[in-house]
Amino acid sequence: MGDSHCRCLHGFILLVVLFLSFVFSFASKIDVSFHGDEKRSLSSSINSSLSESAEYTMCATHKEAKDGKPIALDFDCEQGYVISKITYADYGQSTGSCGKFKRGNCGASNTLNIVNKKCLRKEKCKLFVPDKIFGPSHCKGALSLVIDATCRKT
Image (cartoon, one colour):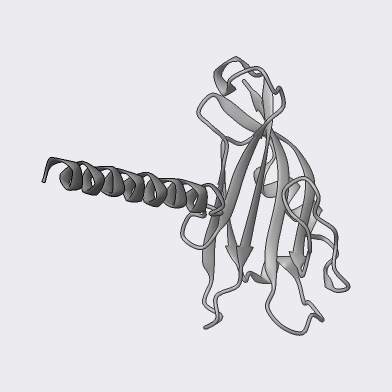
């Protein structure tokens, strides 16, 4: 009886370990997003924490709502930092990921200028998708607003 109880306990422990390793492996592959938006922070220094870093890069993507109603894209630096440089902004069909976006075949040509005017030197920036300020787009299909920027300590 003691030997079979011990085997059951070892089997149960093995199942728990396998389950937990599956959960943590799966969780590490999930792309976390906020309210359907993608927002990431990439520290400019590999060995320093955000509190010690003078600047870091941020990116955000926001897809247009299916019903066409405007949705706010909150593009915020951490407290004590401001948006110091917009390296990429496109309202259209960009491809790629943070720091590696590429302009699609269509989209608003003035997006970078608009985002610079609305967001530069601010800690928080709110843009709406879709918004007439970006002008007409000849894109067919869903549009998204994509921004790559640098936040610098004030």
